Amino acid sequence: MSGRIFAIVGPSGVGKDTLLAGAVAADPRLHWAKRVITRPASAGGEPFEGVTVEEFERRRAAGEFALHWTAHGLSYGIPTSEIAGLAEGRDILFNGSRAALPAARAAFPEVRVIRISAPSSVLAERLLARGRESRAEIEARLARASYDLPPDCAVIDIRNDSTPQVGIARLCAALRETRHVL
Image 1: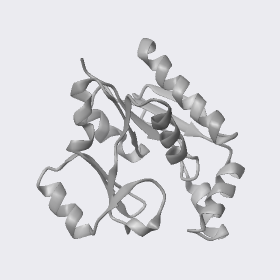
Image 2 (image 1 turned 180 degrees about the horizontal axis):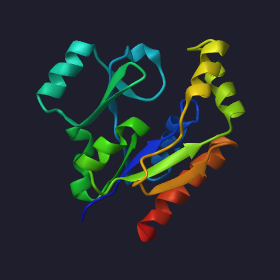
Image 3 (image 1 turned 90 degrees about the vertical axis):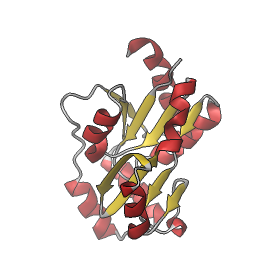
């Protein structure tokens, strides 16, 4: 039996981490792959391992990542150990990036993509609440954001424009539906 792997993508502030945490809490068969990121662990957000650029590069060169990419000036990696559950039939979810999808498809041809979206006004409100960027930086981020995905990706779209509970229920429903559709 083999599990499925899902790339959860969407713009900053769309609530990917909240939805991932809720889906994993609702279904113990799911595993949220913990990323290694070149930012301090104190930066908050999702559960991740913060490392220096040098440590990341050492681990990348040693082949420790099943998938790695760069986005927004940071390096991200999914350790091979985080996807080991696939062979045991567990479904693996990872917070991905549109830029990483070609590499994800090369590493995992069966990867399924779930794109989370929300109106720009909701994204701006959530990003402001984080307190990591100024209003001007957030507006610039939203203005340059592209939500396009590679044309050969099969994508499941869900909206996270309501309460966390509604968004989690939508993600769980999408995961259940893909058991029979894809």
